[in-house]
Structures are given as C-alpha cells and as structure tokens.
Length: 170
Image 1 (cartoon, rainbow, N blue to C red):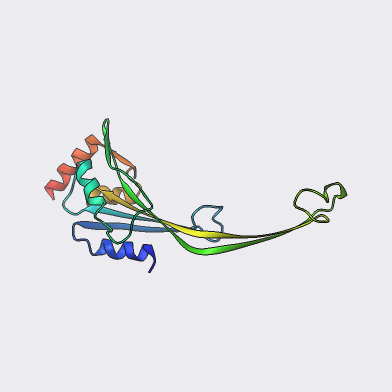
Image 2 (cartoon, one colour):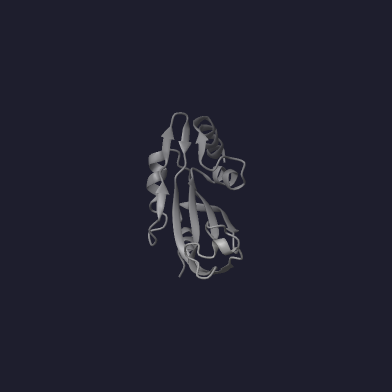
C-alpha cells in the first residue's frame, strides 16, 4: 500500500480532525528533476486548538502508521502562529533516460567520455511523490488556507483571535 493511501486512511479514521482539502498536483512527465507528484492535505482540529503546543501534540498523533520524512514545527513567533506540517516522501516509479550524442567537429571527437566522437548515456531516476499534511487550528482557517485566501504557512495572532472568536459563535 502506498504511503499516500495509508495517510488518507489514517486521517479519515481520526475523529478529532476534519479534512477540508486534498489537492494533487501532477508534474509527470515533465517534472524537471522535482517531485513527480505533490499532494497537499489540509486538516483542522475539529473543536479548535489555538496554541502551538496543542497543535504540535495533535500533529504527531495524526498518522501513527507512517513515519514522516521530515516535519515543520508549530511555533509562536512575534505576532504570528507559524503552522506545522508533516512531509511524507515516497518512490512512485522510475524514469529511464537515454541520450545518444554524436559530435561532428573533428577537434572535439576525443572530448573526455567520448569514443570516436560518440557517447551513449543511460540513466535511471527515481520518481517521487511528496505528501504534505497541513494542520490548522480550526476548519475555517484550514478552508481559507486551502482556498489560497490565507497564507498557508502562518497567521497573525490578531487573525487567530478573530478566528477563535468566530468559531465560538458557531
């Protein structure tokens, strides 16, 4: 089973969160040495959590069956709450590249790596997917981040207090 499938199953079965977005960007076949696919999954604390320490603790319980490749911590910096996220990288295939180079200039025929002005290159490259699980304090903030109406990486404390107040009225 792919990591992406395991991640989606774990998140769907987690009662304390809401999944508000799941966006796939496919860069195949012209990935230019980057990931072949990028998946952003936007989740939020169902009842709302507004402190970095609470969000950090929740983030590390989201997907117990798959270890993240890396992560960004939640933190309170000056007047902002910086959002944390989990990164999951996995191999999704292999690309084979073949190049056949023939030099026509006699002065270059003995260039390093060429034999009689010819070179063949066979190269195999891993194709990878990166899945980002982005946790937000509440569903409204997550929806705004998923819809690009809010910075995906941070929120001002003023906006966070306002979002907390609005959520308490619902």
